[in-house]
View 1 (cartoon, rainbow, N blue to C red):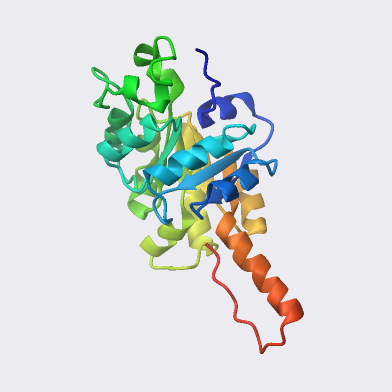
View 2: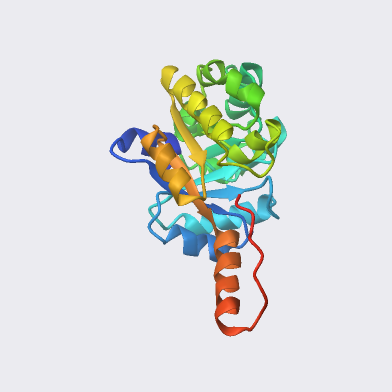
Length: 267
């Protein structure tokens, strides 16, 4: 049985003219995930780190978005081989692993993505959606072709080790998280601070020097455009819950008399 290749690695290799634009899916709702998948963006990130998502809700969202020409990516909550194994078995083909600050941590993520002898992913393809319950011929031997690993750099230590992280065999790309990066630099909540932007730029240069794709999170349109011009190959430009929050607030401001509105923090 053939399976449509939907890894972010494949999409990046096919598209060199522009950055791939994506959206966070954090609500935990398959319905919202489907709405986002049909919006016309390139990829959706189903988040398990800062969202109310477990294995069952991730499975439902993967099923909901499968009918759309969009690349689903799942961010696991931690660099844990058991969690990575479970999410892969759900049929997620591209994983984003957060808080990777060293080449050693990157190698651990790669090993968790691969079957022995190249790694330590547990073998359960006959029971799993990933291999369509053994309906994908040769899945065990070709599994590396079906999965893609993006690691997330979001500390100053990670920035300094970016080239070594990106050079790890099996890492297909690096995603930079300015929120936690700004916090690690003592600039909590200041994602567009010049020092943070400069650190992101250094990471871009290091990752590209290693020959890998690099992406970033940026809800601020001006910052996002600057990162695209600076070489980002893929970017997250919004989130389902943030769009709903800001949109509903805009309705309230239009129709409900109120005092001065508080300024909201960006992601």
